[in-house]
Image 1 (cartoon, rainbow, N blue to C red):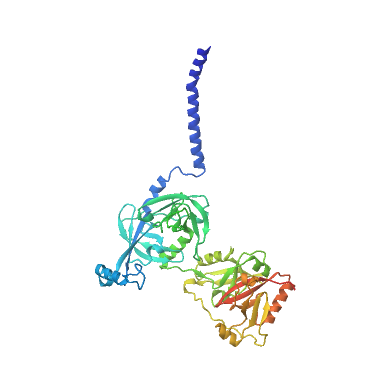
Image 2: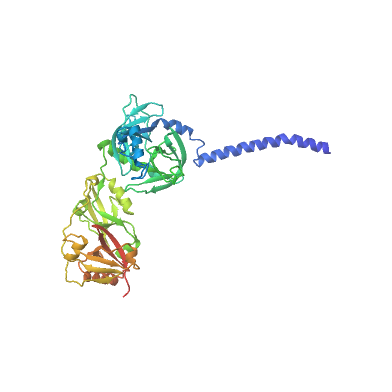
Length: 491
């Protein structure tokens, strides 16, 4: 029986091997199909082949004045200073003051067959000469069309004998966290290079007014600046601009300016050679929860108007204390969003602005000005306040005094300045915690002008009677206004 059993085992072995092989193939195919269904690319090679010819290396050169001495080599006044100056004189001529040419590298991409190229402003800023190296190996000089330092975008133009290969912008607003992306450029001057990763975060703000960055873990290094960030359709959804790094190298935190911001800038640079952003003509600040409570608002969304100088909004009837809740049909979440949507709106357009004023909504029709031309300082005529008030009074941790002629002169205020001067602030008070300091001037309380301490006390009483837990103050420091909500003390 044993030999028979052995024979049966040997006959079954090929069949088992066949089924194992079939199962393995099935699992491999299934995993491949699942990967495709989940959007995981097997390779980026085809995409890279298709779009690489549109990505360029940028080399700039700038004439830099020579140094007049051994700065940065030895401390000023050092006994070695004369020695190093003589060394520079021998090797640099004319005391080492000969101009020298400095070079810088960056990246960019072609957006039209007639030679328009997008890059970062910081890549070409101050450059005397700009050269574009194409993927195929040829080099062309470029002319600067225009720049926008606010978004760090620059537009260049080259003249080529034949139509250039180019890429199109995609919709950055539909990019989702977790989507695959590919970055291309000239990292560390090593030439054309590709890196891949995912969208790590959206709507990042770094430092600018119009910031809207896509964060990605695709490797971005120095030299990648100005290069494109592609989606898997080969569309540009960002311009690689900055990295977050303790040592200057990639640690997987890179930032690309969103394409929907870039497209608007590029369109204006191409048409005008400069940007032309809408201007509402107000100073604004975010609405905090305690400010919302003081105003009786249902939520802390919107943008609080802290000042209305001469301009479009003042002509339309907007007032300090209004909360802008809707602009041109779009809900306003905060000041950052409002600044962006106003800036992206056509200069001269009349838009409807919905504001919350004293608990009711009003719609104003504002004709936008141009931000680049707007003046920020507008003198306001004000009446003199009474000078027969008590010298000082203490309220809510503040030591307050009515503005007198002497106090205005001491604080460097105009003769027409009105309000209550903050002469001291209790360091243990909420007012101190929220940034009020001696030298501030309170001009409004509860969205009404205060000319005297009795005015402020009256507004505090009104707020208590209305069941408010806090009162909204308009505070000016150095001419700059801001609203602060302070909790009302129990009687």
